[in-house]
Amino acid sequence: MKAVLPALARPLLEPHLPAGLDVAWFASPADAETMIADADIAWVDMQPTHLTAAAIRAAGPNLKWVSTIYAGLDALPLDVIKAHGATLTNGVGINAVAVAEYAVMGVLVAAKRYDEVVRLAAKHEWSMTAPGQLELLDTTALIVGMGAIGTLIAERLRAFGVAVTGVTRSGRDGTLTPDQWRDRLGDFDWVVLAAPSTGETKTMFGADELGAMKRSAWLINIARGDMIDQDALIETLKARRIAGAFLDPTDPEPLPADHPLWSAPNALITMHLSGRSQTKMFQRAGALFLKNLKAFMAGEAMTNVVDLDLGY
Image 1: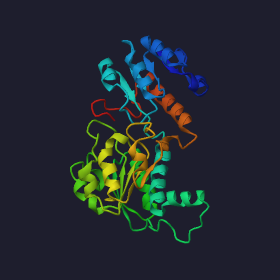
Image 2: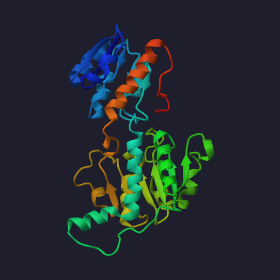
Image 3: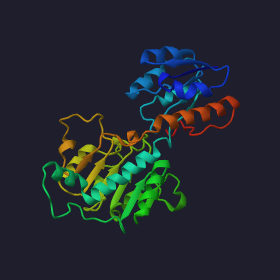
Image 4: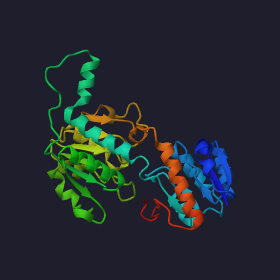
């Protein structure tokens, strides 16, 4: 049994690997593409993610399991993995706490307009009026996507006294289903996008959805940039038809310096840093890989197995 694994993770993984596992440690994209050719197990995450996709496409016929640290899988060639008959496990939960905290930060920044406070401080101006005066208590939030991250966001917002409604595919636990939430958009002060990126979610939030929101509402996106029709969002922000948008991801990424979204009124852009706002990501990823490796070698159920048809 052969595995190709990141050299950066070697100190975390090597002391705990089972005897008899033949491991190749890649340190470059070229290494990964060469080493995966006869590998049974592959953890070949790289930045930018198109390098990961290229490595997976170079896999040979032995491939049985691909592990990734990423929760969102839109950059990976799921069709290739499926064609190999391989299992894919993702990183759901690794960054969940950090991303959930970032989403709540976005809500608080918007409520108190802390972005304006920072700009006043940069100009050494002392304001006697708070730029943002909205309290979270008794406001309402819609969370589109109540998976690991969405659930943590809901818990944290409820602690502030926010009434939270979730959206799930099944409508479990009193949540709305995908065909119900659009009719309710006008009920919410905060609309949080936390759904996985799939073909069904691309530009799911367009002119109609933006037009259905309260004029005082904020759109908070910590999912993927392509879930929002950015032209429609820019037009909506310029027309002040919603209060603003807190955008961790954008489309494209990196956002070009001359892109109009940068200067759209009340667009707060945080460069897709939410998952990086922590120090434990690699340790958690290593622990998850080792847990799944033990299960894989024993023929037992693994954690975070992806449905390759649904894409999450």
